Length: 379
Image: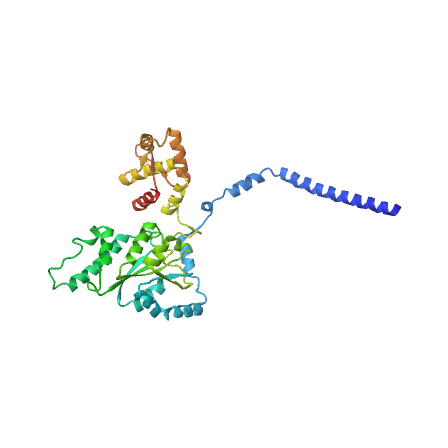
């Protein structure tokens, strides 16, 4: 029995030594932390770092470096492009049957669609809409389509002076509904030609609002207008409801990954790793404003309306903004207004500068067109 008891005692002492060793490691860890009182502050500073604090490369230098990257898998990409070109006749047939063509897949489809238009759509009048541009005047596009058809009507009815047009004045001065109504009433007796809208990035920043998509859907319903478009975002189909997809656009979907770089489409977007200044875009400003309180949004609207009405002035004096906000019951004191202004300044929504008379003036760092669009989307 003695040996068995001795074995138990040895095991017990061994476990006690292990516990003491672990306790020693724990004490050493906390003692080491106590000797480094500034480590917490260092970690806090590191966590508070911003991308804007980094020394980023100049955007032009970065774009030049990107242009020098040699293309890869050229043979495979060429074979893929040839397989798409073999489908041109099929695409044309579906277009003539009243379907719209929607191209999706990784890579820029700009060159592919323009090649399709130049080689196959020779019987169509092709109008190109670059949806990747920051702003697009859709009403002007619709008016241009109407002008094309009206010129054809005049040429066809030149010898019939008794026939009058359905629109008696210039198309740009007509309402959009009147122009679309005119396009929908066109028949083969009026015009012989067809117009094809070639839309690069129909989900682009200037076209992704519901109003623009509704207009494009109505245009696609016109008997002599056809639509060929591309999308480059996985959530692009969320722009349309069931009616728009199946009865207006009548999309025929084609997966055409080209693996081509988005050289032209990305010109208007700052590179993430490049220093592009602090210019505030409409999209980011809208996201920030929508996260603020309704009162804060209303204060911003007062400042924006003043800036649009007084473009030549250096900015809106803080005292004038406070007076207007008090009149509209948006703020109850200067302290409340200052809290809103601090929030705007932290998000780069406003810039503060000294007026010639010494007053602090506020200005929104957006051009007039962008500011007007921001107010419309904020309403």
